[in-house]
Amino acid sequence: MANNDNKKKAKIALTLIFFILTLILSGIFLNNLKLNSLEKRAEKLENKIDSVDSNFDKIESAIAKEKKANRKIYKIANEVQYRNYNNVNSDRAYYIAEKIYNEAQKRNISCELLTAIGIVESDLTHLRYRNEKSAIGMFQITPIIEKKYEKNASNFENNVEIAARYISELICRYNGDKKLALAHYNGGSNAEMKMQNYPETKNFVEDVIFYYKNIKKLMEG
Image (cartoon, rainbow, N blue to C red; front, side, top):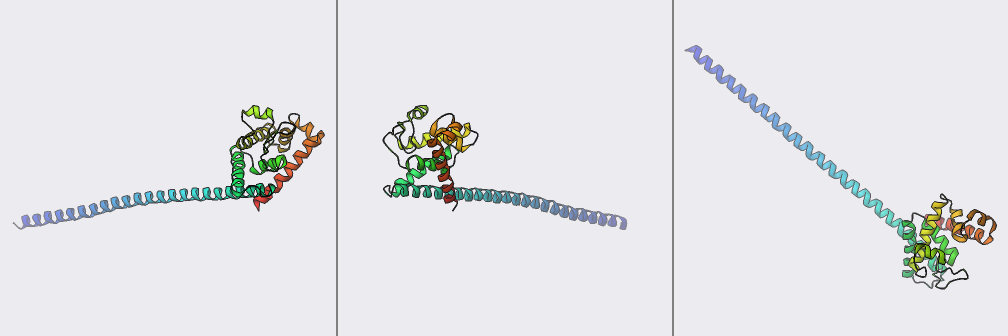
């Protein structure tokens, strides 16, 4: 009888021990599940924070780029007004400057170079009459170049676009050599020979480079 009681007690004790161990292991398992869940949540939160940081950096970069662009446009606009003896109001001057800047950006050329060409060609004035070479507008576009791009160069917007496209193509043609590109812009083919032997072309190139460097300094200041 005593043996049976001891066996029962031992069995109950073992059952209790098993139950307690089950509870402990279940607790550990649940804790691990909770820990894994927390770790996943933390990872997701970290990814969100990284995404926010990345977006913030992009926004900050875009704002800085916009500020830089506006600063350049305003400086070109000031140049337009100065060269037109303030006969152009600030809104029109900004519109002209913005068009020059945007066309330069589209064609992957510097707005300083395009502005310098405009200064030498017309003092940044959109001339509506043709000169002795039949060139017209702020960038003195000739009929041959006008025909090449199939645009009416007497229109200001077209005039700027043609000039930007043309000088961009010439810079590519002469492997980035701005002087040869400018010589061709002014005097046509045989740019190197004309730059050396034609005073008009030589002076044009020198003048554009002079204003280009000055405007670059102005933009950096």
